[in-house]
Each structure stands twice: as C-alpha cells, then as structure tokens.
Image (tube, rainbow, N blue to C red):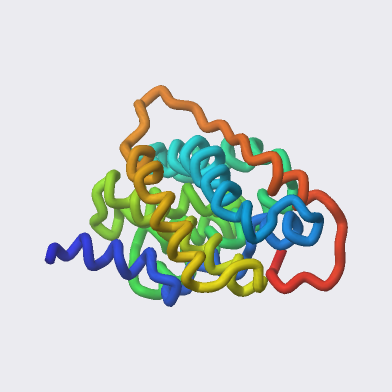
Length: 216
C-alpha cells in the first residue's frame, strides 16, 4: 500500500482532529424544522455533496492545491458564502485542520496558520485542505477523494448522533452515494469557478434556534 494512500486514510478518518465533526453543516436545523427526515436523509446527503461540495469545495480545493496563493484564494472564498453561519464554520473547521497539521510538523499549515493569526486570511476549510493535502504528499485526485469522503462521512455521522438514522442506514446511504461521488472527485478544469446550490441546509442554518447539539 502506498504511503500517500495511508496518509489520505489518516486525514479522512474521523479520529483526525480536523474540526469537521464538530458541525452538522445545517443538518441539525434542517431536521428540527422538518426539512430532512429519516426517509429523505439520503437525498439530502446527495444534494449536499453534489450541489455544495462538488461545485464549491472541490473547485476551491483544486485552486489551493495547484499552487495559487492560499491567502488570496482564502480571501476570495470568504466572500462567497450566502449563509453567515456556514462561512464561520468553514473558517473554524479549516483553522482546526491547520492547527492539527502544523502540530504534526507540516510547514505549509504552519505558514497558513500564521497568516490567519495575523488577520491576513480566515483559514477556510477547502483552502486549508488543498494546501495542506498537497504539502503532505497527496495527489490532487487523492486530495479530492479524501475531502469528499471526510465530508460525506461527517454528515452521515451527524445524522447518527442526532438520532435521525442508525449506523447501518448511514453506511447504506454512503454506499449508495459512492458512484456519484466518484464521478465528481476528478480535478476540475483550470477555469472552473466555485458555485453552490444547497438551499435546504443554508436556509435552515439562517433560522435562529437554541439548544444546539453541534457547534453551529
């Protein structure tokens, strides 16, 4: 087994302290408001991954991986969120990844973390992933697959922790999503621009509520 594949498995594992598993990314609010049910979770998961991750995170990740200045990519990314909670969570999760990777000795993560500390960047998750995953030796294809798996697994785990679905249903939803997910983990073209269409979760995230289980 190749070293880069082992590293990808480590980075995508829920045990890696990246911060992504602290958020439901809008699922908790969507469930509370009746937008997502046990029966519709698989449809919601596919919409999030194909409508948001594939069209937004994937494009930004590729830009950062391809060597574009991560600070510049990050500042551009910061202006693209419709839902303010999503913008904040993306920055917090990305900063958590930078902290973990810098403490493991990654120089790119350390430099990016300093830029965030100096107020030069927000540290958004897809930017941090693109820059750090390349620094850790992952190819672009493997970096994208790592991010996609981590995002989908995090959403499924959130559904289980919310009591919406069971562990086996979560695995079934992930299995059913894999063919479509595999088709969008290919590198985007150089002129691709990020876009996002995940209205259910983003509208839900903007609704005020108390007593959250997740950080959001």
